[in-house]
Image 1 (cartoon, each protein chain N blue to C red):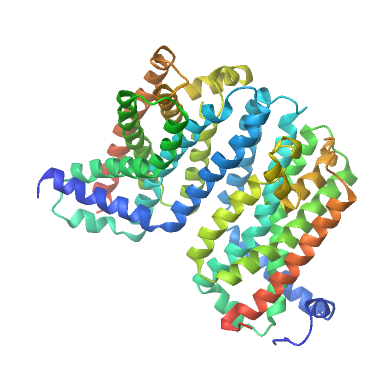
Image 2 (cartoon, each protein chain N blue to C red):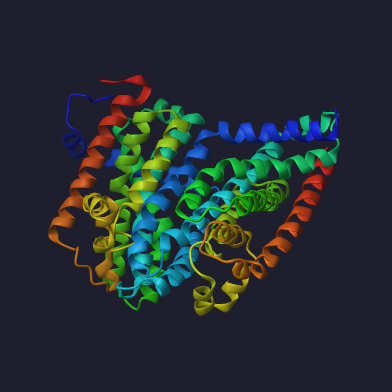
Length: 268
Length: 251
């Protein structure tokens, strides 16, 4: 049932247990569907290992003024991977629309909001699968392993991936055409990732770039992760966490609104 | 139809297909433009060498490799959609088809990468003779790396395995090379990496660009090119042979 008259916050609180179960079922279906090529997981982990172990190690030999640059870089890669896991939800939506899977979902006796929640939860699960194992491996390699930190890390990965999926879904639902979305998201992702303080400290960036990086969600993810890996991060502040939470809430609300109103041509 | 016309017909087809697949071109452009405008500028402030001038040829070299390897996507989907039967049905010599695929990769690589070579030339010192040399090097590297892509596309028939191989190969070629760091630093991290980078075509293209537009001199680049040159010749032979074999077998 479509429910246009209530706000997303109200709708979320109105979800019943059976609705949540439906959303979890959908999340699991989407994840299992994505894993029909398990090699995708191995590629993600392999790319992460190669970039961290080779590019990170060699560039760390060249960089001056940033202590333990390799671990800084690797944690930045984790932050980027979390952002990518969230944004992947958008391309999944349009890919499903292209191959008719979304039509099947829309024909089910379930509300758009459940479909949206399922995709959000699915993104969290994907983040966990794609980023969780490498993140835990880095925690061990950095000598920072302990159970509460590991659990907190898992929670962060899952929560932020799911939260940022709202941006991906809003972006995808706004475009609706797969090729146009892929083109636009290539540019947006490339610039969002590089104009962040994930791969290099904010202090090293030119003023113009740093001004953008301060408000970039990828920077805030990196700053949130850095203390867990014992990286002294002068940028960490309560304001940063508030900004990241604001980003996630804005992402979820805009994703929900665009997803609900743009599907099947229901524009407002 | 002459051999040359048969070859050029397929080359044109590959070139137009590449530029028509706008999401692929957009993906490549976003990556290389963002690297050149942001990553190099920031790292230049952290690395005590003229890093933009050093690494910009690396961005151009990775552009050559990505565009040439895209031939893998073309060949893979042709076998999936079975449109290779169409090519087999044409009154074309099989050798023309194989050669066209390699030249097609080189032309794609050149037309895409030229936009990244121009800033390298602007920032460096211009020598017409050397600049012409870089055109030959890019075309040759495009053919060799394209042959590797063609081999992957022709041999692997499962999407997940193909996609994984293609992605990881691209990353290995760009990362284990001297595109973004000098060879002596690779040697410090791991001598094996330095050896692999010595024979990597990406290193070869980056070094040729540094030789043509500075800062490398002729003495630095001569011996360094023998390894990549031999690898490219081997890749062309292997890729051409495997593609020809796949076409002949899959009738």
